[in-house]
Amino acid sequence: MNKYLNRFDAGQRLGKVVASRVTAADHPIVLALPRGGVPVGAEVAKAIGGELDLLIVRKLGMPFDSEYAFGAIGAGDAMFIDRQLVDRVGLSQEQIDAIVELERAELARREAKYRAGRAPLNVAGRTVVVVDDGIATGASMKAALKVLRGLKPGRVVLAVPVAPADSRGEFAGLVDEFICPLEVMGLGGVGRWYESFEQVEDEEVLAALR
Image 1: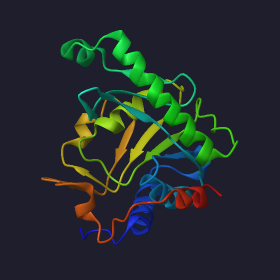
Image 2: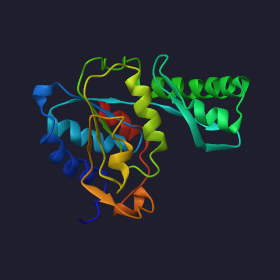
Image 3: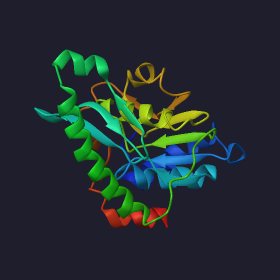
Image 4: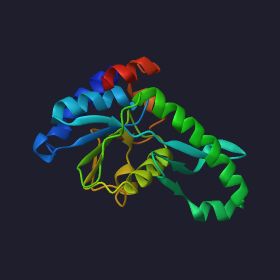
């Protein structure tokens, strides 16, 4: 399979595949991870006749390495913490609380900016399609899905344009269905599989939601 031209091309191609598994009759909600997942998710939502919203989560990063996630938080009181990892590295509750407080402030800022007073869609019991522009390590996506599970969705479908070849098995226990047209060995970064992979700006996120 050829590389994607850009995120819109990826969303259109992914949307065709998702539409064979999820239809408007399922009353689906497409939850896109901002910012890169939003242009992809917008095209998927068009393809399946679904509502588009955001799955805004904040990774909880280790004090010594903010990219090394020990959990994530989402809307409301949604939270996932990998307790085994926390115990293994010896994080104190005080350290965890400080990081959660910091990330809750940033989560609130992003929620306010992107939603502009509009409440998140209620996913309880609904078919939810979670979309990003790709999966690299999968750590953040796993944390996001565990946060989503706390919101009591019905069927959960994970749909991404590109992911490592072993992702399907890794996500088997977290989603009801995994859709990825391009599963590759030696991924080497999501951006490698796009001709154009420019940063998505906030205004593009807002435009997609409008």
